[in-house]
Image 1: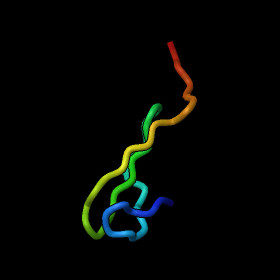
Image 2 (image 1 turned 45 degrees about the horizontal axis):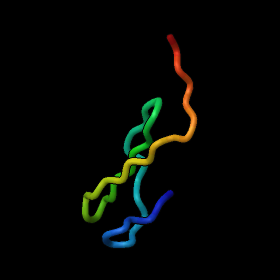
Image 3 (image 1 turned 180 degrees about the vertical axis):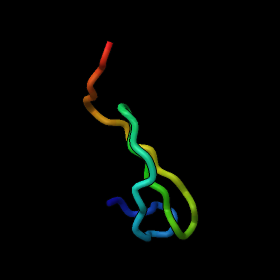
Length: 43
């Protein structure tokens, strides 16, 4: 888990896609999107 940059509380796992992982803060509702370094491409 990551810490919220605004209020410092623990962020919840919100959503995950192939390229991104998103976390949301339950207190101040800010979101943080982290790009994955490697991902699988299906063609």
